[in-house]
Length: 145
Image (cartoon, rainbow, N blue to C red):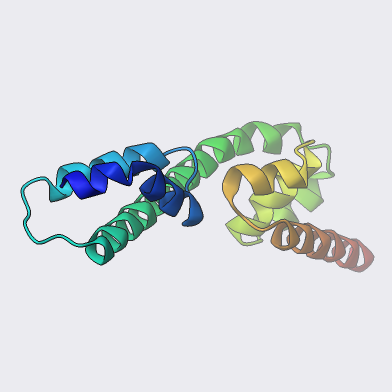
């Protein structure tokens, strides 16, 4: 066990290389607790333990981001009521998939596409293409009506 404590900075750098900077120290400490009562633990086992703990934390972060997304999308009702569109356009928007509808209305209410991408983990290109396609749908719909 002492051999792992001696290389503490090395293990923190390993976790940082996995892509987790802020919680690197916490992950290493959790790994120490995990191997505390185990015997015959080598560097390879400890490295894979750090990797799995890091991946688990990143998965939890993604779930948390999705929860934040749903929290942010509760604003949707307010945005929807404040959107300055013609009534028949809003009825048309209601027929879209929820993803398209919510992203389009969030962007049109003043939220930045980059901010939405950063807060939700959705790719910027995906948001951009969705909004672009939605605008084209509205143009096509207005031609018909």
